[in-house]
Length: 144
Image (cartoon, rainbow, N blue to C red; front, top):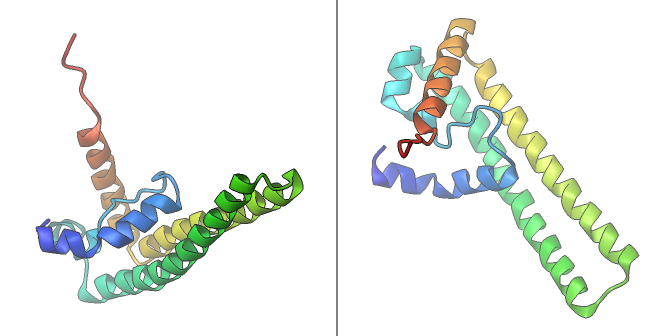
């Protein structure tokens, strides 16, 4: 991926990473815009546009939620710094975790909706590509 294309998505990838663990087959970059992915999956222009629309719609919502999460975490830090009451801190933690859970749900549904644009055969191929990527990224223990 070119540096300019990667930089343009850095904020989105960061937000997705902060939204939760990468268990739901997130490639960590806009794979539907990658020429090799398009070719290997046989993506149509329409499919690429639909997947991008799902991503763009969700990422803007995630950015808003992330801003709210940051504000709530700042409030929690202030509460802790002044030694606020346990009940007050607990309510704030619950609020923060609720926002975080909502972000995780949004992200997971985004990944699902992206894949729903694909044909069953394309989903199988995408899964294989993901499995290969995970395999290639696993650290190798060459010291034995």
